[in-house]
Image 1 (cartoon, one colour):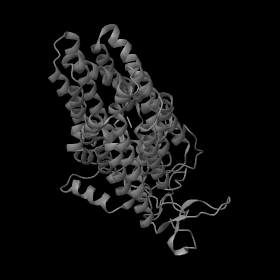
Image 2: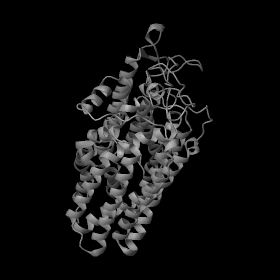
Image 3: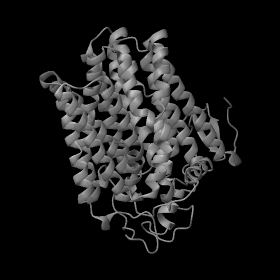
Image 4: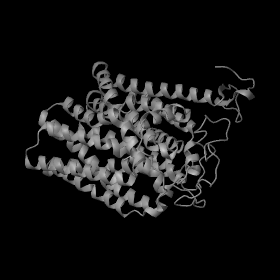
Length: 490
């Protein structure tokens, strides 16, 4: 499925507005989710945990750890259901692409299927956020998971009966995309209701580890199943796999959820959400960075197939190995993120910059083995960026606005695929796999550098480059402008 030194304890009651557990403090940090509207909302919004009159009182500080979110029974049910449905989702993706290729013999048709699945998020993603803020999120998720299960079973029936045509797959892909428009923001915002603000970073990281772990299992199982009995059985497993998250949602204890008030029905809620994000640098700039990287730097199916076929002259097994190592790196990155107690914006920018530079290095890798090894750190840095961005934006958002903000987050991250994919594919076809991969990495690195400098300027910081040697001297760091000292300019 899928701030500052965020405290590991739940926010204290009566915390003054805009003074929640944010990444404050270190003057050398980039500005964090300062103000931490989210933390303030979680602490000072009626009905939020830790607020007077909240449905659930603030919990005492609890020790963190890599799996701290799993202390929550509701989250354990959620995670258990997710691993089953995520495995089914990865099986369905492989079977869907193979089925379209079998029916048409066209890779372009496979690209059309992918674009149709992501297009609804680009067109209607913000409206899904309005609905996620307006209605109880657990109820929304029960409906969306049931619908996706039925769509999976419908495609299984068409395939197993031999009646399936390519337009059926197109229609099902678009329908799944429409359901995802509502499911995604509701799912993202529901995380904090299950675990509370103290564990939201950990839960986001474990969600990513969950999804990437399924990525290691699902394609392998799907490949064996398709070879043995056909694509229809993979679709059948996917449809049935949604029973697991449905059971988890229905078995959750409402009394243990961190209640967040729903937004009343009214006009202008979409514009209100956009104005809310536009007026907060700690939200708008991370989302801008997510948009650039999601659109131009996450096109691995295009690049890895091209490298396997055109550069290293391998087969589908080589492509599968590239994906497996990328997934292993992603799992490692997610677990490392789960151990952290904070999600500073400087970590966000640093991970994005490292991700882009590693893609540049991989594009220029002279040998197969160097390229293969680079898949691991690319996966680590990519997942670190993704989970840090998600957690930082969630915690910097008022609970009543979280659905709309997360819908914008997912719209720019996922919705950019129909725009960036064809462009990156064209560059790769015309100029070669190395140039395509290089272009994506350069865009990611440049976007990270620009957003980092903007955030530093907004935070009253300047870039200091010190060419003196010694353990007390850092080559590059951000320092407050007002305490400017003599330094060597770049």
